Structure formats: structure tokens, C-alpha cells
Length: 189
Image 1 (cartoon, rainbow, N blue to C red):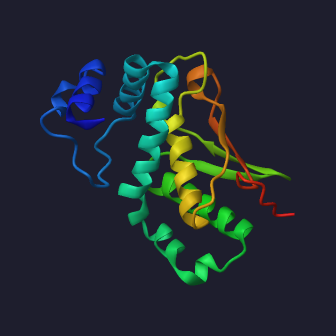
Image 2: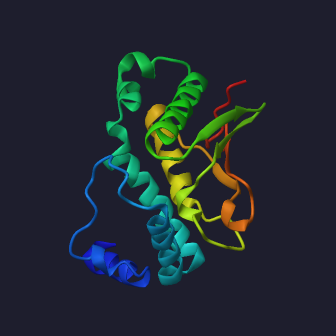
């Protein structure tokens, strides 16, 4: 997106104060969810629904590469002993680690449900839909975060992640459906 693109998004979101200095990259919880929702909405305004979705997915994936991977709960995922675990176990542990980070550090109480062929990740306070009203789910950055955590936990596998409920469209919680089998036909069963 570059500096020019970022500044355009910040201006569209009404966040020009961040053009000169972004919030600190720390865990002090200084960024209000309304700011993240405004940036998310500005991405859609600038790039259209489809382009904004794509940018938000990429941003979510980069959030894992550039920061979330620093959490101790994720640190062991690149260890050869973790990578030697069966694929299904790495997926489950990766999602459980994400639930732990969201719940403990990100003010997003979350839990995971397991079903026959998929998981449902339920997030109580999803920041990208905070205070928004929309016709379709808007938590694309979170879908990108989930995809990247699973990519990392499974040493490169990709998984289909779909937001099936969103606070912006009137749901009580935001929910993401994650297929158990990676894209490409590998099966657990």
C-alpha cells in the first residue's frame, strides 16, 4: 500500500492524527476497536468491497508475520517437535493458541467448537466490525489472521476460512468456519 496509500486510508477513516506517528507497537491496549473498524471501512471505501476484502486479508496475514508470532504461545510452532505432530493436531493447537491470545491479550473473548469436518471460532468482540452496520461480514482481517496462524502451524498448508456470522450484520458474536482439511485435498480421515 505504501505511505501514500496508508495516508489515503487514514484520511478516509478520519484518522489524520496517525499520519505522522502511528500508535506504538506494544501490548498496552491503546488502540480503540473503533479505530480498527474505521480503517477497515476506509479500505472498502477506497478499494471497493472486493478490493478492500483482499487488502484486509493481506493485512491480517501480515499482522501474524509482523507481531502475533511474538507471543510465547506461538513460539514453539516452528520447532521440529511441533511440526512432527499429526497435521490435525497442529491445526487444533494453532487455533487454541489463537483463542488464548485473543482472549488474554486482545480484549476479544473467544472460544473454539469442533465439528465433524470443520471448526467454528467464535469471537465476542470482533474489532473490525465494531460499531459498524453492513450487509455482509466485514472481519476479513481476522480471516487473514486465522489463515496465517494455520499456515505457520502446519508448515505451509492453506485452509478455507469463512466468516459465517458478524456483529456488523446483526449477529451477537462473530463466527469463523475453518475447514479441517487443507485446500488441496489432503484429508485427516
